[in-house]
Image (spheres, rainbow, N blue to C red):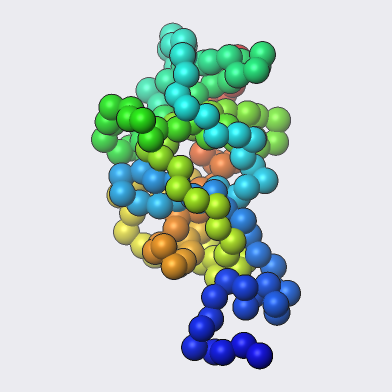
Length: 165
């Protein structure tokens, strides 16, 4: 029997509520999430080559296991201040439709499950960055998690010119 005072994520699973699995990462002291199904892998920063004429949030291109991938700087994409990369800085390789890019984030935190019904898609929150790339927010034991809309984040008219690399 479940104790109502000890509610946790497993209560949703027992009730067969649909869950969403998120990989969480940080930018500017805020926690973001990506659906696990969109993440191919998480890597340390590796060598990249600039693309002349690319938008400022495109750090360049890199070779990952024989595939040339465009690298996007999440801080620049969200109009946040740029900082030096640290030992915690990671590239999250994400896939959306036919596009694969590496997104540079401050650090990768955890993998969590949240009830789909707890995701607020009509958010009215004050975020430090650009909100057009946000698909929703959810409150979790770790605090507020901002869910990234990968499609909007990686596809834009300016980005189309380097997507073919």
